[in-house]
Image 1 (cartoon, rainbow, N blue to C red):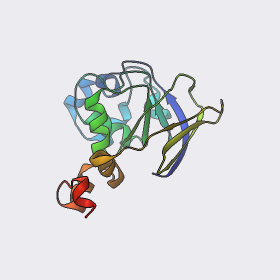
Image 2: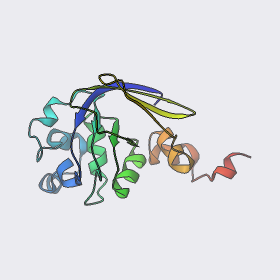
Image 3: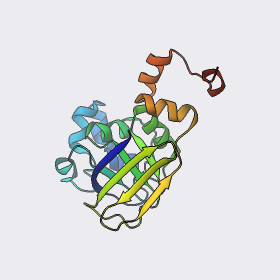
Length: 174
């Protein structure tokens, strides 16, 4: 993803995976295309119905804590949200996001309000996040190594289809 522009959809700190998609819903199905209708229903029952394709999810600290079920990342993607900005992520959610092609970016989200237009530009220097309302800009370093390769491929499955195996950085340089 080189450039992206979308409206901020704000959630708070310590948003656990059961807030992203309720355990009761996961008992019925793990199909993210069904579950996307229930995204964040415990926080805001109208949230899923108000999501527009391309929106940017904005969180505080410890986003995605709780259970390590990857459906929490896939349901965000299925809803049309390709990027999550957070001050910090639970490690399991962060890896599940990368493995499924959802871009997780750790950055300062303190001044981003619900509905702000967020622009992201990615190049070799990293990803620059611009809050168009406030004018605040932050550049985060690029995701490197195998995690960056997986994300660039669109997730773990597309990466393995392309490469056939995990490729160490030193192997791909030769």
